[in-house]
Image 1: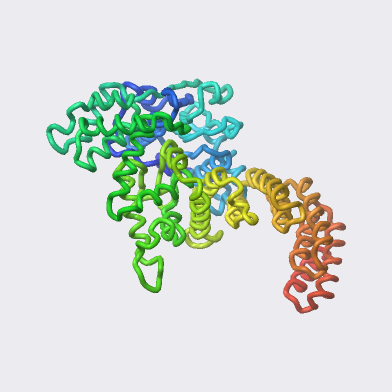
Image 2: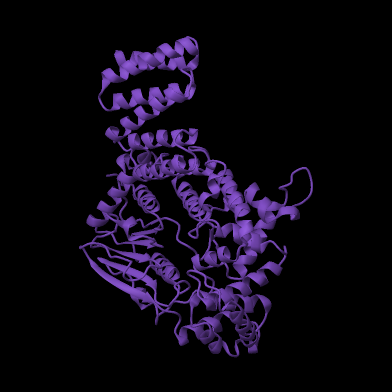
Length: 564
């Protein structure tokens, strides 16, 4: 393992910003109020019916900020846990930041291995270190994603947030104490304290504040949205109660997953007010685009890309030879309005995970979006992700940005369904898969991704389609990157066989596939088979491409190196 610097605290991952006027919940969030609990795993889930809006993530955020500010831990790791690949990527980054990788170097060290191996090093370090640590796993969506990945060790604490039920959220295996906390809404005292702190516009603004909190069931997200609207409109709790009652009646029969009626009503009032703020009319398309992506932090470059600006700003962009001129400024203003009304959070200090959206807000936006507009939103979001996705190794690229983009691509894919397969696989699907094999390679995740993409391609496009063949090629590459040559070679052989039936002997892609097979044979120690394939490829290159063609020269050099 690499060198470490005892005494230097390490912060890894993007900790979400604290909500405006964040309230430390001594009564309803006491499970995290006592500071670090070494050797313990804490599981936080909503207790209120309908889930959503009880503040589980904000409790974890407050806990993380408090520990870090007090320098009470030597390592604080914030890990998005909605997907197994995101957990592994977060652990790999932590291993790099702790300098646990060969040579003690961060990015080069990871590149020399895989993210899976780096994650294993990180977990081993947690089990044996004497340094104080906290790992927050935010938004656990499937317990199976954490099989073998639960952080455990006597010196630290794991905190997991999830909207799963107690029966669904399984705990880690033996090795430490487990505390389960069903997070309720604000207590009466907490709700009143929050509203008194936030609403200071004029003396009568807080009249009926406690009644308002009770109307909202003490649900923190609903209380925060209501307070944001009252503050932004210079209204009062009494006046808002009347608006809320009318709105609650109108949404009473509307069912939105993860968004109970009190939150749905306050959300809709906040959306209306945000939409009226200058630049008028942009808040809704800005919120819609964010809701198509991941809730755990969307890169600013995605939301200000040309495709995003065209979708959000439309005709309001400045006229001139550049249709996108003025678009980013209008878009930033729209997101500032959404933040002002409490509909999302903006972390201007983080270019990687800049805009954070509550999952209940995303559910509400998607539910109210007209079905006929979904295709336009999907197209704009996919184009925006592609425009913001840098090439591997280019300035601005890196594993943290890649993971944030993958998270948003996965969220879009889950929502879009077959819309990203019309007329064939959208380039975003291919770019997301290719990024899994860029350093640090998420080898296991890449295998699963290309298996799923290949199955979908076979079903939707047909086995003989070029993109189905490409998925098989990428799956073979993923197995090879993971060192599983016994799985990679049959796939490479199938790709070559398929290519021979579908392509001309001089087709570059078909020749490249045969070269890949030869390389796989060499890596597996089957030198005779590799040489045989390369000799046949060289003969076809000379015949169909010519002796001076660059590919012919490369194959000749590789064959010479293999036979020396």
